Length: 240
Image 1 (tube, rainbow, N blue to C red):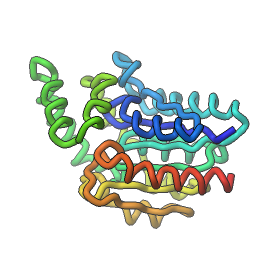
Image 2: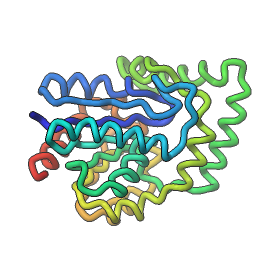
Image 3: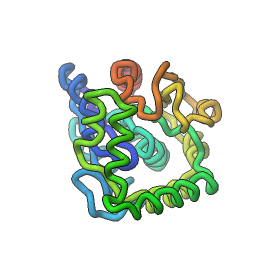
Image 4: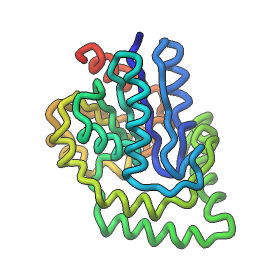
């Protein structure tokens, strides 16, 4: 049986972010599990915490291990930060890791600035839903825009998530990881300032920068994202 792929979405999105990748992997007979993080998608209404999010990843890995193979873990943005943390805490349980759009070390000034902005947006009558959807439809081509929004928009998790990110130490964690790591970022991603430091900190890593892509690389350039995902998957699972 092919090794499963576990997909972890980003902030305010949900498992539907991964529709293109799930369809592609499905055609190849590769099982996938796109999970929802606390406070997102099917888990809207829950409070977000790092521990509860990591438990969600752990549950998915445990289920995948029942196939008798080590899964390949893919995380985007928030999901990437969490995937790095989980893999470092759980050596030997996955074949490899793809961490996308998470190549900046969280900094208090930036995080607290975003928290202030999100609190203002949260005072809007719709808590910012219309602004969110407009931004997505302006900057993400179809069908990606619909995929991003389809699972619901997590309007109430920003403060919890941004505070939680400050507790993570991705560079230190990457140094502890002993499986292949593939970093994928869009050329115009605002969260790739430390991509070189991420690469240097990791024992076995490659970095791919997708031309013309923004932060939402997996839906803005779905084919250009899925191709390296498949390459990373094949390399990692064949060596596992």
